[in-house]
Length: 213
Image 1 (cartoon, rainbow, N blue to C red):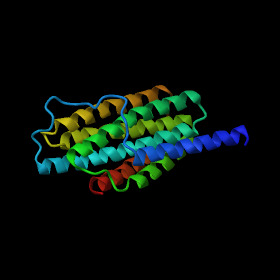
Image 2: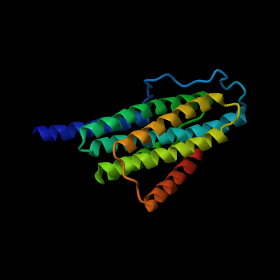
Image 3: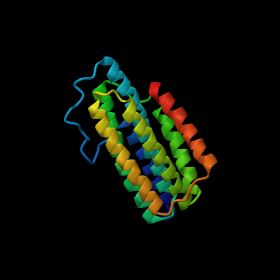
């Protein structure tokens, strides 16, 4: 087998491995789970159900983040940018682990459509990567800014007594802001308004569906 063929095969296997780990394995965080000294002792059944639905949506977002960054790292010709995408994906793996753990604590399940979300996000990441580094970075900026706003909304909507989920969401929000800032510094292009609007519409469909399914 030629070196280029071996390299392509290795990349394909790495992509498959990442997908399987994101969808079927128990993710491991490199950083400790963000916690609150107040915990969630005051949550009743209704509040736990509400928090579980919101954290399921956040977990779906992290499944999609794994797919997006994996696809963008795969398509960029820049070694430096590939490392940047991979570093961001590692932090998103923390988020994936944290939200998975919180779902377990709340007695809630992940979205049944996670494989669909992953495949769709991976395809979008490939398209963004194929559009060039500046456009791909611009996609990161817009995605992360939208996620920040989404997490802000969840901080408002989480039950008042759910301090544990709030601690996780706040740290996630800080990390997403840093990812967007790093992409801007790396030379992100501003995406055209119609594309930004389409991204918001697609995200709305995903978050609304994942809230229930």
